[in-house]
Image (tube, rainbow, N blue to C red):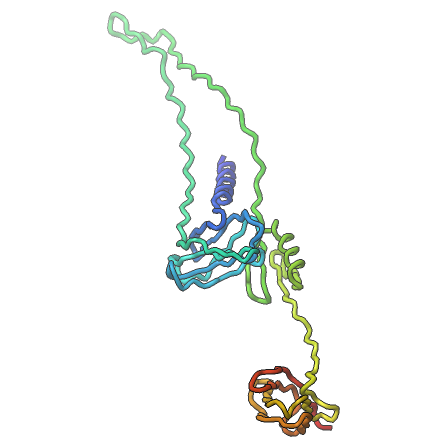
Amino acid sequence: MLQRFGFLLLVSLVGLFACAQDTLPAFTLVNKGNNRIIISWTNPYKSIHQLSIQRSPDSTKNFRSILTLPDPTAPQNGYADTKAPGDRMFYRLYILLDSGKYVFSKAKRPTADTIRVKEPPKESRPPALQLNEPPKIDSGNRINFTEEVKPREPEKKEIARSEPVKPREIPERIIYIKKRDTLIGQIGERSVRRFRDSVATRTKDTLSYNTADTIVLKPFVPKEIYKPSRYVFTEKDGNVKIVLPLAGEKKYSIKFFDDLNMPVMDVKQIKDSVLTLDKSNFIHAGWFKFELYEDGLLKEKHKLFVPKDF
């Protein structure tokens, strides 16, 4: 009996939580205790481009995003905030649609989780055994024990038909999404396929399972293809050559920087169309950045490599 009651209690709690999620732009905000604030919602839209959760100690300003969902189009989603400074913070959602329009939800504080289970009514006790009639007393004021005293027969009750037991609902498993070592979101197991397809069609990033319930997002890093400048470049002997057409008619200047953006050389006015700078002016070998100006305006910002002496 107790096991059946516990099972029915679990099913009712799961159903109540699933039905309690508000629909965007509204959202559900519950304080579960133990420094856990649960933000959840139901999404009826398919054109959401970005959805961010924001938190603030004030209801009108100082909002900062604490999480941007990797898949904002999931039908049901949520997040457990375990790093809030307190349980009196304000929360809101920033929703950006594919059309470029955006909206902020109303800010609100979390409410305490007040779900309680009522105790089952106590079973009524069977009526006490009663006698049909009291013993008769004869004319001589003596009790007559010769008559048999029979107990009252209990009333017949109809046996209630037992209802079929519903199969147990297994709660959906939560999958955590990380970018390197940082947790960036979490989704339900049924939304993993949609999230994977979204990443594959919209980005060049890759996904891999770190554990059974953790997905690692690896951002795509394009390989840099170096293409030398046609104005400032390194010759075969390692010297730097500057080629500027119409140098006599315009005012050219160039600034060189090392890989830490520290100034190395500043040529304020170049009068020759072809100018060669000895590589010894650059102190050491390696990559150097430069900014080429024409009549005071930036014409080109690029870099070049100065090789070692052999």
